[in-house]
Length: 93
Image (cartoon, rainbow, N blue to C red):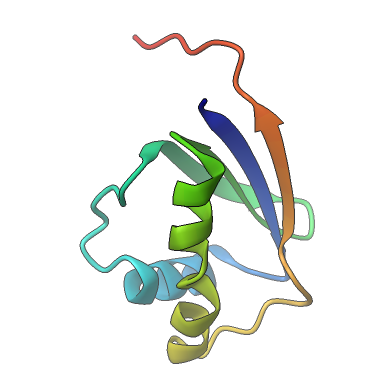
């Protein structure tokens, strides 16, 4: 069953996010199980909305995030705020 994941990274700017993302996923290719990814500025930091085939697929990818940010010299202000929600439906253009 697909899951939606909403993440808020406190204190992260666009430049910092891009540096971290370049370390975590340099080719910007969809990792196993990713259905959709979008990110942008939110109050107090950077927001991400992803849709994954399963929570296990997200967790496997997310395990690379701390090391990638550290390699980029990016330090979030605290742990990421992660909220999972069930996906009822998807509609694509």
